[in-house]
Length: 188
Image (cartoon, rainbow, N blue to C red):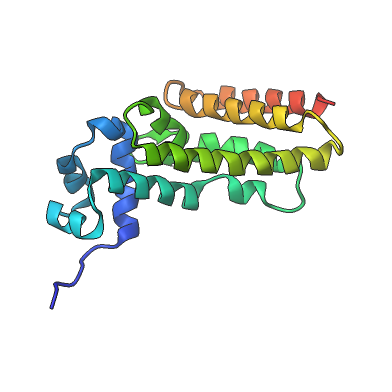
């Protein structure tokens, strides 16, 4: 009979996110994960195959629990959803003062990430783009430029996420979101 597991998978993933967020995939060691999660290597490897698996599951967990798709799927659709989605860049953070988006932040190591990570991020981005287009079309029925505007929103969001870790002026970032939303509302 096996020993009872003394940790929850979700707690391990939440704690692992903070390590991967801070150090990146390549520079995070199993020892870092042990220290942060409080679970020894054998316990981690009972639950996960290896460091790559912990990273991939952390990324999936993050996107399932903190992704913007819930915001963008809210009815009624429209600019208010897009603005709330952009504000996530300001409010989403993990321990250690990291702000922005774990998914966007992970892209700094794109060449070092497991190929599965790129697929997870691409799938999430496609979902966000589809939802952004539906919100844009709710405001601009028949807009042929909705896909382009959705791409602009995603690029702006990524920039905000990166800026969150180099700028501490939240009021300036709020003004940027307001200005960008004014630009979108004027786009016809």
